[in-house]
Length: 605
Ligand code: KIV
Ligand code: ZN
Image (cartoon, rainbow, N blue to C red):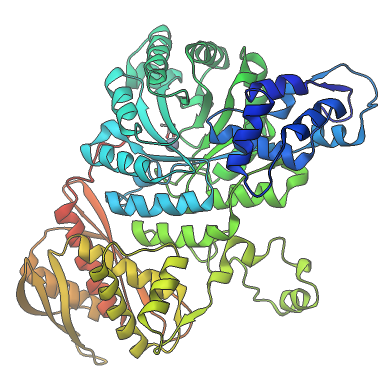
């Protein structure tokens, strides 16, 4: 920490690193046309020996846009003693560092059972992540399948403000596939990894430590043929030997890696030790100040966020995380929790992100809807109850003075979006405009018309239509448009106390109308059995869950169905004010995915 020591600040070097006053002013004004910076102002920085804080933050943004690492501390050198600093220079030295947010929902998140996504679904999420302001979007694992490769490429083509990244194992084929996939990106990164823990090297890779270093170095060098932005991960780093990690990281930094990721692959780490681990590592690796240090924590012991934050305390300036904490096994660190923790506890972390926090809840809802992973109601930040005060004492306190029981504002994370938006009389234009505000643009006029027709149908059944309803309604349509092998036409169920429920269903299968009926232990069971009488999918039902999308008894029920067959797992979702119909839609959506997802299924990392 530089606070409270004498610091000399090399502004000339800083300006030169941006290409000199003319180039700096030009790039700055291109990126921040609203806050122009003249060359004269840059000369003033030199004269005064200081730069206003706001401009330092913009320089950091400017550097990150062009894929460079910028840390104000690199331009200061400590000389010890009591601080005779000019007022504003001191505030610059105290300035918070940028924390880079690397989102891996589309890669590690996709490794959750049944969460595999189509190319179009990935693009929708990527656009929302860009809007959210994440720095890096890990869009997939290019060598895993042609589908993954195409999805990364398509994302690289449309995303402009976030870096688009592909994962790759540390072998030539993987790295080159990643390099090809990110080629169209405005800013592209290759993330290559190899395991470094004794157990992984010996039992999984069957490689000697020196061979691992050799493979890592080779992979980084090949990656640098495609981009200057190369991340290296030492898989299972938190169970690796410190001396070996120091050797590996030293070698890959020399080979050209610009971000060093230290994953807790199996969720084994404990926060106080993680902080220490990062401190020691960063202090021992030569040239550690030339790279960004990154944490990637899994949640097997429920400590992924805590460990990520501990890593930040230990010097990490990138955190890898996912929306809703989605991810392999118990998941990854949750993006929303990390971002809000550093924002709410600036006093502890002294870092800032560029995340536009009101976009958090829309991102959470979109990911939940597309992957079929519901968000638990008591989940921090994005759970339906995260800002609900039940106890009378709390309600009284919040009404008198909000900060008595609230450390964040619901609207700051996007909960204000939960407002009444449209009604029965709203027209097509209002509908289209609201969808646009929610970041949804139906691909064609027909898709818009179909969604509008579903909206009118819903408005007949439900007096108030909320943003959540719209998201469900559009998502519902997209899954069926994507692969309409099976589609619900109509459903009738009979239930009576003491009698076996019966379901009669009409649906289309490969364009042909089918009718079927069955009884079951409940109306949902009867409906699923009626479908299976004809479809005979032989899939196993692994999960069935219902969520109310909004409050009130006229709320739409959103049903998630998880089916597995021959090692493939898929989630389907359906929404309707009638939860039995929603269940049938979800079942069909899962069947459709099972039929069409050969392309999505890919070997897990
Ligand atoms: O958990 C892990 O180690 C990973 C790496 C591939 C970064 O996901
Ligand atoms: Zn991981």
